[in-house]
Length: 348
Image (cartoon, rainbow, N blue to C red):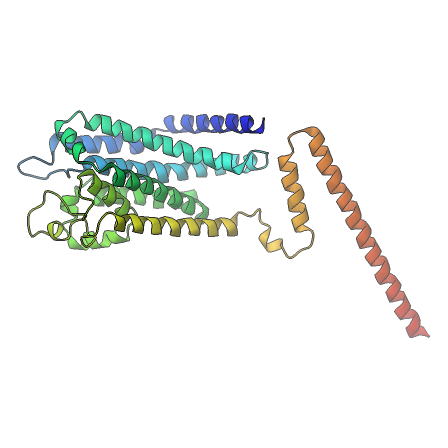
């Protein structure tokens, strides 16, 4: 019975997020349209197998998938959390018997669904071009899917960390936007990596970007070069020809390992911020007696699913309150008696 109720609530939360997503033009434009149009422009007008000029990377589709995942997994997740926090939806839901797992599970589940849908749209559109149909035959799907999953997980934990670190949602959106537009133009979509990566200063500076490692894993897997992370289609002796994607000739395990490290760091930072900021404001009052008992009573009230259960909880709380008052009165009486005895002894 309870599981069926949780499923219904879960579905309603998914529907609410779907409505918010499709009715927000910014989500559609930045999350789908901008990435798709950029990819199509490179594939249609500057294919990687052209004879001259500024060329697209052969893994431009993988770049588009990775960048769109960053947008939907980080910026949109922050947008949802900020909107629900402003409308007090999360706080109101947490005062009901609704499980926290159902609430946050629905948010993350919707986020993953959107990413999968956008990825399929990008692949279908890219397959309209013969050059992309040739490239897809070289994809090493195992490492690519690992990079795809790590990219979404990294974006999710970064979003959760930002949402608990900054109270002002504008700061959250600014950092999220930088995390989206930075990789878009510096890691292989807005400007091809065969151009940006040839500039040593930029190439080295991007090692500080957490998404570099997940995107490079996806890009290398898309062209079948995960064994040594070499870079395809560049002139001999150039920076990218010598250094490849920049992992010292090591395989895809190295960017995957670094990505896992970033995920763990942001997850621990999120947990630390959550523990310090969102424990119902009781941490600073924990030294006072009776706080934990009151917290337990609040949790019991939240879990009550009927009027009878609620009445039983209230009666139990009142009974505890009466017992506590009686103990206080007894202690005060004992103190007064002891004080009177001391006064009597002094007068004698």
